[in-house]
Image 1 (cartoon, one colour):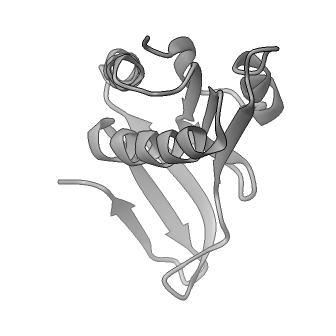
Image 2 (cartoon, helix red, strand yellow):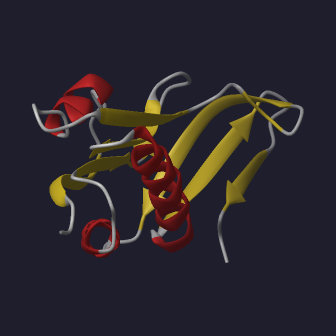
Length: 141
């Protein structure tokens, strides 16, 4: 049976990781894995002072399709995922994925795999600004 998708959203607002986690947890869930990809203050030895995620206009549609396609093949019971775009302060979440399952192994495997698929397929690009005045775009093909 495919996992139920409780949330698949691209948003400009701050993500509440605990609220995302709560969506996949119920009395049938034996394990919940919560991944929060947070904006860090460094990258490859350089100090990051700010970061912006730019999303293609199709990013919500693509995100929903990625999450739903993953859920259809998943051995888990529930999935919720949110990706933030726009300016994101250091320390705040850019991507939150929660996976509920009967067993921990399936939940851990699915959470990691879903994060990888999202990073590969979502048309969102990271623009980092560094303390030395330089900047770079990441994931731009």
